[in-house]
Image (cartoon, rainbow, N blue to C red; front, side, top):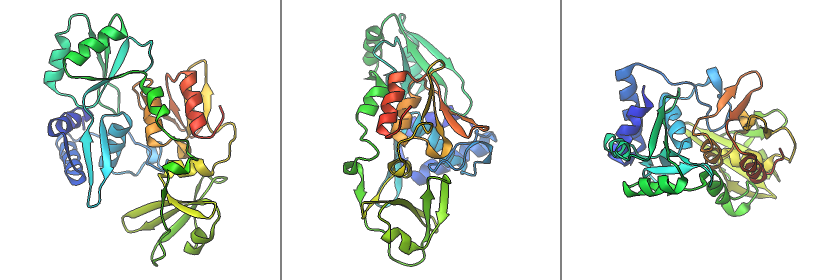
Length: 313
């Protein structure tokens, strides 16, 4: 299935329900009879060729991490909306901007009509076309792109990171009581074993600190116990909250500008998006090391991300 086709469909519709998104992905996949590379899930356990995530979930994570589509959990049903068309620059010195958000043939036609701006499109496996807009200066690219309706995001990676609280900032956590009704399957995340371990429900309610997963049928919730209080948090935030500061979790190869983490400890969504926007490419999973690798990440971006994760590089 071509992700360019699904992104065009989503762009034309603008927004909708989760069921509409799922139906569209499955219909296009059936028509084209092609496949996507495997994508690690929100917990990081399903990485590489062993991924068992449904196709529509892999499409969702791909579009969300690249900054094309936002997904929301409403009171009745999950919904989505396409991000308005934008040009995101990796830094203030960049003369090339990455196209994010809604796309249409008319939009590309208007871009092609700008004489002093070059449009560079490349096909990358497992994602929509990577499209860069390049000019003599960043200011010139911004002026030209703004005249045809693009929003401008300068120094996008650092701008996003600057708006993200630390994983140990309780202000960003949602205080919530742990379920007491019977029937829940409960797991505790073991940092030393890097996996979920089944425990009695009472362990979650009595723990002073720890991250717990509650599962019942299609429901899955994550609760962080922190100093005898309970909070509902995104799973990757919870993992880093309970992880002590240590070298090696976040690794950085300065020579090749590659940032990497164990797949089970991939960064929270917005932080991961900031790192991905440095190159516009999804991370690669290195099976021998079990790590997820992000390319073209400048040192100051890697360092800032590590600080927010309460880790060292």
